[in-house]
Image 1: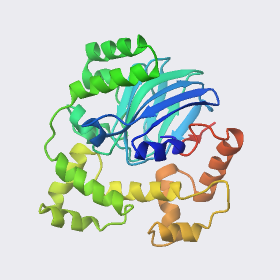
Image 2: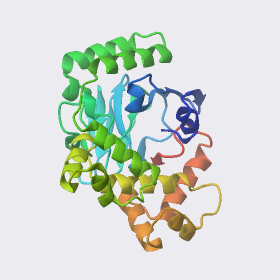
Image 3: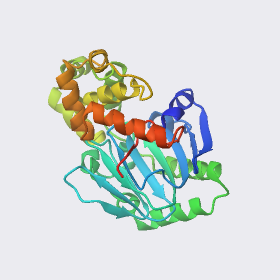
Image 4: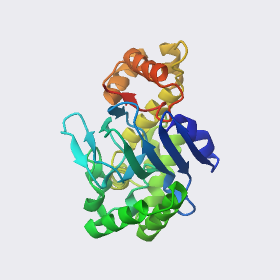
Length: 300
């Protein structure tokens, strides 16, 4: 999600605009979807770079593609694949690489870590770093019908309403969702620094049960979710336009020391913290105020 969108969306607002040739419209869905989805969005335009890397964050992603196919590589050990109808991926454990056509158009959803589970017929762990097509999740007929209805809509706001209605129709019950949602909330509130062992004790379940539920509904273990929250909080605390005190940043985020901090950065992005900052500054310098700035990194 673009960083500029977060405050408005946290307040239940709506974000829209045209920056650097990209139209981005985003809003929070109505209940009960707002308990599963951070925002629904419409995106159209020319991406700032042909390839972008998205570091892991505590969110799942569902994209309905309405333009030319895009390429996604999930996990460093996997090959990139083309996605014509869109893609679905549970909370990633490693960075995702997106290869965009010269002009892209899509409708999508940024979901909470557990948000995909009620829409899936398979465990979320099967989609972790393994993007699948919309067809593989909902079937060819349903995927084609959804894309056709969205393409015929009168504009972004009508598209988002149609997309919201389609998600509501597919909303199903999921056992264990309350447990995972509560534990995830505790992890998020602590910025990823909570003692994971205490979560199962407080919930009155075994640690094995807790891990199994997280893998089934989120795609990763509670420990991995906590690491991702801590990494994300650290990135958003960083101001790429100014000097960065790495020791202070690492300490405030709860890392043992700067070496631990550096190891986590490389694990999540493949970059050292200083190299990451250089790439962010390049984006800021070449495309100031772009809607993609704040999380995506250029790969070209």
